Length: 315
Image (cartoon, rainbow, N blue to C red):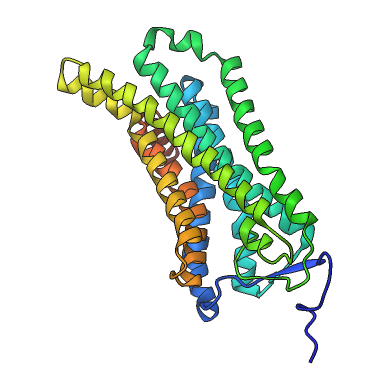
């Protein structure tokens, strides 16, 4: 019996996404938390954007970066969830070859972009706490715009080789991807050619993002902590540290998830495939869901504006 998925071809017209292999019978149940997390991410991030736009007192560097983070989270979660839910609900597993590479690009590009925004936010907190008198002079609107542009260009250029390298590979084995979305290594592993360039470049991007970004964030917070611990009173220390609390929580959620997923993918050969695919989805869904909650709860200005919004609606 012939199998169209295993016949020889240079470039497939479509790929077949399996969802979460081994858990096909529970796809509908898994879709419930996935859909819930996506709905919270959409509602929360749009709420952040709405509040910052409406409240003129929030028109500053910290909140501009927060808006960039919200937009990034919206694009990142939307890049994977609709297709994943269509697999879970309607068994719609086919994805066009070009659409697959586009999804691959968006997922990795906006993941890198999110990391860059966290670095920019750490720099903003560093200037605000370590050089408060120069904060408004250093981080003007044009400077914030240039930082945002640099973050976008860096992520775009770093990830651009991924789809180009993937497109140039001959695919003569199968077009079945044991994943719920077009993850870079999951796609190139289907190629019947040497994929070491793609693998090494993927490690290089991971080092640039996870390595350098975490290093810069750590250096910023070491300097911030030095200032905090040098303050004379406990109340002053707590108040100053409180301005960084939401950022630290968001950073921990993102990087712990990213490092765990990366280590599981590269070194967890004994980890069941369905567990790895599930974690890979959660890694891309949890930060977009939690970021607006973290900033909404821990940032007084956003919390107060949100309470006023509901209070006015209730009266």
